[in-house]
Amino acid sequence: MNSESPPQFLVIGGGPAGSAAATTAASQGRAVTVVEKDIVGGGAHLWDCIPSKTMSASAIRMDSIRHASRLGLKTEPSAVDMTGLSTRMAAITADINQGLVDLLDSQNVDLLSGTARLTGPHSALVKLKDGGETQLRFDHCLLSTGSAPRVPEWASVDGERILTTRHAYDLPEVPDHMVVIGSGVTGVEFVHIFAALGSEVTLVVSRQQVLPYRDPEVAATLEEDFIERGIQMVIGARASSVERENGGVVVRCDDGRVVEGSHALLAIGSVPLTADLGLDDAGVTHEDGFITVDEYQRTSVPHIYAAGDCTGQMPLSSVAAMQGRKIGRHISGMTVTPLDYSKVSQAVFTQPEIASVGLEEVDAAAHGRKVRTTKVPFAANARSVLQGSTRGFVKVISDPATGVVLGGTIVGHRASELIGIVALAVSANVNIRQLVETLMVHPSAAEAITEAAE
Ligand SMILES: Cc1cc2nc3c(=O)[nH]c(=O)nc-3n(C[C@H](O)[C@H](O)[C@H](O)COP(=O)(O)OP(=O)(O)OC[C@H]3O[C@@H](n4cnc5c(N)ncnc54)[C@H](O)[C@@H]3O)c2cc1C
Image 1: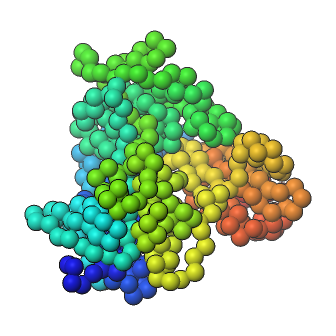
Image 2: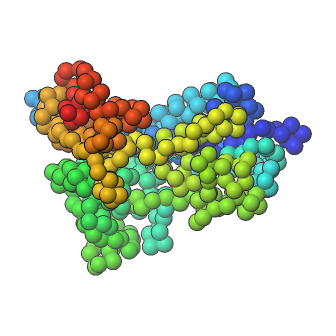
Image 3: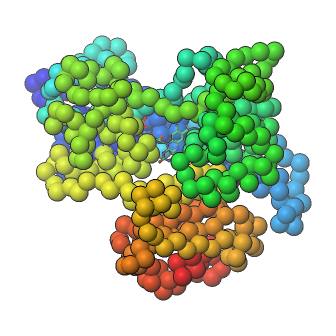
């Protein structure tokens, strides 16, 4: 594509946001070019969602083998094969990537391998991976360049002992003692992975609970599990340095506490990948690198959109993809309703899993909103008991005046799947009586949802 045949829609960054926008716009007959510097599928497929959940799947299996005797089973001695695990992760990423490349290809989306930079409000320069560069003109553009792990100045990440999440997938052996710094979603997921693979794990928690902004009851259930697994938690400690010492690592906290381990993993948030994107050249407004957008994802230059992690909105792959699809429709002249962030369902992939949608009790309390909360523990659910996974509960939140389901939280086995039922109830404004009247399979974990609604 060159200046004589301007692309109608240029997508910079082919992660969940970019690829969803590209396929939606292409299905509406738009000419689309995607510029991607690594792989389509993005960080989500290369470093984040897919590899972390693939690693987690192996860790969960290892955990269940280790505890097989609880289900009356005898197992052979088992061990983790880190090379086998990395090979599996790479194969899965390659498979998913190929599927996406084929999909884009089938829709005649032009895929350019290279790095793009805006040079004006209607133009971008692409440095092609195989050498050379090309200037593109567009009438609509999407900036969906994602984010990268935040590395503080007090940590010298070396990819061997001091790691970001991007280094966690290629370790030659299961670490003896992993120190995880950061107890948000990413931090606790890696605590679970390494503990289940067999590492000793210490978690440095800067606040008073893990998952600091979540329902304290949820955090307490997870902490209970961590304690049972022998995970050390250093609560209320802010890491201020991490260094390699004596063949391992030493993490120093600002209150004087010191934690030693074989490896350290930083999970302390991310930074937007927008520094070299030419935002100022195109007149696109940003704050600390996060691109400012309106409810239709338009930037300060209305024909340039931004979506996904580079906007600093809810950093989830599902959200990025939904924003992308809506942009694809918007630029194609279709009617689009803005995304309702209060109805996004999300999960933390620990064991037990934690999933929620809509209003949480803590949010209701913070806004002085009256809600009806009903709850049942999985210990009272037949399927959970026979599976040996009774930790956790289902909480359903409804409006006491109208009965409309406003939200739900599930902590338990496969909570990330079960939450879909509550998510549908929330998005369709279902009345709690309809949930109670829904006949679920017996025995199933889903029965706990109807019981919690009662
Ligand atoms: C460890 C971890 C696990 C996660 N797990 C989950 C999960 O289970 N579920 C979930 O919903 N979310 C998860 N997330 C969050 C999720 O990964 C992100 O929200 C999601 O990837 C954002 O999608 P995106 O399209 O904005 O960006 P990305 O997926 O990061 O894609 C951006 C793409 O843009 C490309 N790019 C950047 N700059 C340029 C340029 N100048 N030119 C061309 N290409 C460029 C990059 O190479 C990249 O491919 C996880 C995050 C982490 C860190």
